[in-house]
Amino acid sequence: MTIENICDTEINRRRFLSTSAAAGIAGALTPTFSASLATASNKAGSLHIGTFRFDVTPPMGHSLCGGWIKPVLGVDDPLEAIGYVILGAGKPIVVCVVDWTGLLNSAHIQWRQALAEAAGTTADRVTVHCVHQHNAPFACLDAEDIILEQGDLPHIIERDFYRRCLDSGQKAVENAIKQATSVTHVAYGQAEVQKVAGNRRIIGLSGKVISQRGSSSKSEVHQRLPEGLIDPMLKTVAFYNGDKKIVASHFYACHPMSYYGDGQVSSDFCGLARKERQKQEPDCTHLYFNGCGGNIGAGKYNNGSKEARVLLTQRMLNGMIESEKKLDPQAIENLHWETHDVLPPLNPAFDEEVLMRQISDKKQRVVSRNRPSFTVTFIRRINAKIPITLSSLHVNDASLLHLPSESFIEYQLRAQATTPNRFVACAAYGDGGPWYIPTADAYPQGGYAVGVAWCAPEFDQMLSGGIQDLLSRA
Image (cartoon, rainbow, N blue to C red):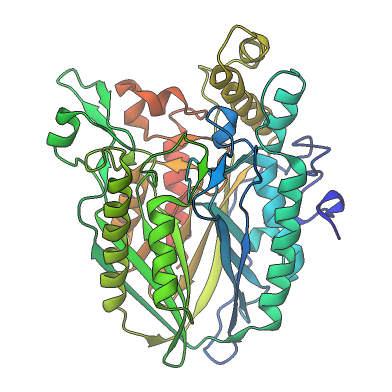
């Protein structure tokens, strides 16, 4: 079955009415937000795991980062989607991470549906995340429809390429299941990453953001100021068959760009570190997940040079290696999957009618026309009551949290503090529909991230409550 005719799929026991490319987000889920009750715990011996990877490198000329930077002129290194399927814990569980800027709204739902169909499971048991490199595709089908109507704007995502990627993903998952092997043990470790992350938001005496320290900076002030609030630890969760390591998932919170905008496709320093680790351990599938890095970047330590990319890559690789040195495999005693749906409140600062006029204004820059299409799409999605699914994989005393969009680091730190006796690893940049997800107290501080946050401040309480609910069922 192709992506064109994906059937309606159960998402957390709710009937999804229509999320095809043609229908966009016209369909809806019933507006209830109670957590999924479908969980399963299994003793070691019945569990199997299969791994997959497939190419998602865009073709020449394809838009990058939503169409407002240079399109593809060349490929420094290819982009991948990597994941694994767990069998034997109820319906199959699929975990996938993609070297793209983002997957938003119906595009994200379609990815989950497609991989679910290939695995013989339901979309609520699939999580898909992006690493968030910028010299990479930004997929929002509904925003693509909006800008195509204008007739003079660059693509956000080309549908033929998008569908080819999903077809490849379905085949890759099917093959992974055929080649699945027993998984008997799990291990986790962490290590501090040196000189990569720093908080992007610099707060002055007024309590307001006075400067943003982005992914790169040549400012001596930016480099001199302290790192600020970050999570310095890179976390690794690994699965084993006996004493053989099969899968190693790495988690670290930081915008993953050293430099971009030159048209050269790259997985950048986080992806390059993952690829190097993969070369070092070819028999183990290595995955990299960006944590809650919405307000975290490398600008304190990165001047945007090619030499800096090399240094950042090595520092990330060092963190992965050191984290894995702490791995101590233990027999899997229990493994289960939990979900929790949220329907975010909209930020009242954005008005669909005003945004549509801006999109149609040919005097505006491309970024000022393409980017509002993402906002309009999210407004329509929420008005159609299509929620965002949070999920978690609990295995022994470790919890892997799967969160949406560009969540601020505070959500990750809160999650770890909520259950200090558990090992909590956060993967954000799931459904990218909301764009930035600041904390409630960040809104009055202002700054770039708040200016492109499509949700109201009240979403803080809702998202934090969802995280707490997932962890309470570990």
